[in-house]
Length: 313
Image 1 (cartoon, rainbow, N blue to C red):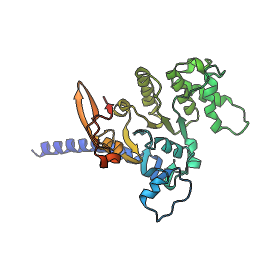
Image 2: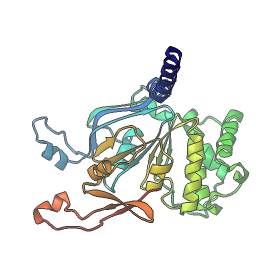
Image 3: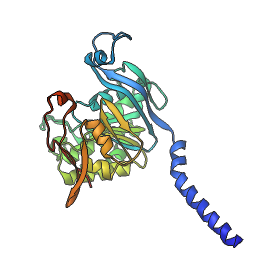
Image 4: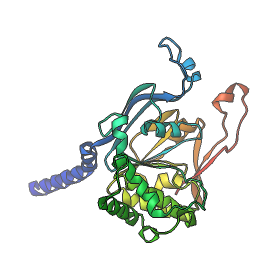
């Protein structure tokens, strides 16, 4: 009996250690982005401490009391309604907008020093397709942040550019004009341009906003593969991505609702979109906003039915 008991105890200990391993690995991984109690917006004049929270909001605060910790090799997806502050958060991380309160650190450094570790991929860029620039030259632009002013490109630069194109399966298009590529191919080129900067973090803004679902899937599979060697922080409206590819998800709408978990709960959606959410199924599972009253119009008591449908896998 004692040997059986000992064996069972060892099995239980082994299972417990397996359950605890992901948590220990998470704690041991280096923090690459740290945001603590950050407020940001577009205020034109200094706000006095004595002013009320309501007055501070009226003066242009877009993000309030944001706290976010991103570890090495995380794949974080952030969703939220238009005007919720997603673009403002990107501007803060790129050093284009200074927070009004709080701290932001990238690789343990200030944004000014740490932004060089970020490779930024914007939404699909609209441009003159007849403009004579090739894929190779577009990706090589990613090396500008690593070069001194007026310094020529080196053979090492060319190797890094080639590796970046190879990583996104576009090396065979190196001599093609970018205007002749499809939307999905162009987005891969922009990802390669970001990789050419040798970033520690890929920051993507709606990477599939102008491509069809088939191309979207291929891009997200590409990002999942790249995540083996680079941290990814992505802004997206695509619920399929949130549920299928990212490792953790948050909802951003002035405040950030983030728990370092992959599950997207109705409570998180309700908090972010400011209306109740029911999880229902009609053949394919999806989340639908139930009948509700918007907070802004609560005093009018005007009901809204199914204001938005969010499909998930």
